[in-house]
Each structure stands twice: as C-alpha cells, then as structure tokens.
Amino acid sequence: MERAEHGGQARPLHLLATAPIPMSTNPTELKLADYIREIPDFPKPGILFRDITPLLGEPAAFRRAVVDMANPFRTAKIDVVAAAEARGFIFAAPVALELNAKLVPIRKPGKLPFHCQSFSYDLEYGKDTLEIHADAIAPGAKVLVVDDLLATGGTVEACCRLVEKVGGVVVGCAFLIELAGLQGMRRIARYKTVSLIKYE
Image (cartoon, rainbow, N blue to C red; front, side):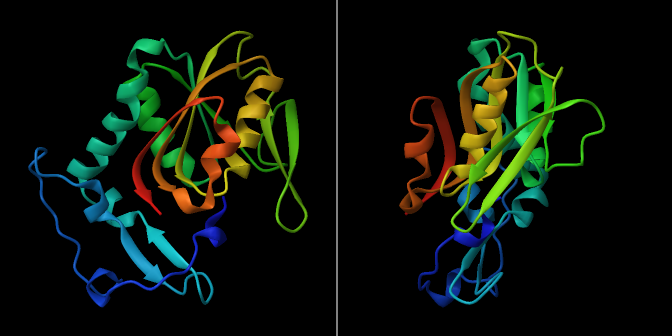
C-alpha cells in the first residue's frame, strides 16, 4: 500500500520517534496529528514513515478519526465501505459501522475464496493486482473507499476502478493521512475526497 513512497525529509529531533506522544482524552483538545509518530529511515534509508499506531492505541483519538472520516458522507446514503488490505481495513470497518453500511474487502490475488473480479495496475516498477468478490457490490450501490493513507494514489485509484468494474458507484474516498507532495489526489480528483491530516 505505497508505504515506501512517504518521502524523506529532515525533521526537528523533538518530532522524531524518540519523542513522547501527547495523549489528551478531551475531544475538544484532540489534534489527530499529535498521535502520528514519525519514524526516520523506515523501511529503508531516506524514508520518513508516518506511524499510526499511537493513534490506534488511544481510543479517544481513534474514535475521533473514525467519526471525522464518516461525517462528510453521512447524507450520501452509503451502501458499501470498501478498502484494500491491510491498514485500510482498520479504518474501513468502524467507518462502515458508523454509516450503517456493508464492509467489502479488496485483497491481493489468492486471498478471497469466492469468485473474484480483478484489476491490474502499474507501479513504479512492475504491476500489481487487486481482487474483489464478484457478488460483493450490487449494481448501482453507493460506495465509499477508505484507506489509512493517500500517497501516490495508485492503489486507491485501482480500488475505485475495481468497484466500478463490478457495478458500484464510487461516491467518495476517505483517508486518515494525505501526503500531498506526492500528488495522489490528482488520480482520484473525480471523486469527493476527504483526508484528516495532510503533510506536504
């Protein structure tokens, strides 16, 4: 899921992985970005990794993120929340519950047991493929695509194309984090898109 494309840039020492994560349980004081830990040189040198596990470890922050991802789509009558493995599932499941919608997983080849439709897309080096159960989305169903992070946009665009291939209508996309400098938003500009935390 585009984790090797987070971009490397210098950060003050107090923002790096050794710094404590502030934990406020007062919803009016919560700043979700305070719960994202920066890990330099992971998974390889030059990469600055945005670690979401501190946010997941604080129920108030996790709950706030889920509600804020769902809120812009509450009036859209979403039928399905779809997400690609693996971290997309973490947010898609509670967002689906918030919207009283069906959850549909999109997975790598060979992971889903029933009849599947697939979609292949280009990576920087080579290709990748995603699959969805052929009967997972009814024709015309309104679909929200959810992921933890928008980087170059290749994976989420493939998810949207796969949803459309099986007859769904992509109403929008929701992310916890957007790495705006990688311009992934351009690839999904035709959809309503929400990201809660943006990094340049």
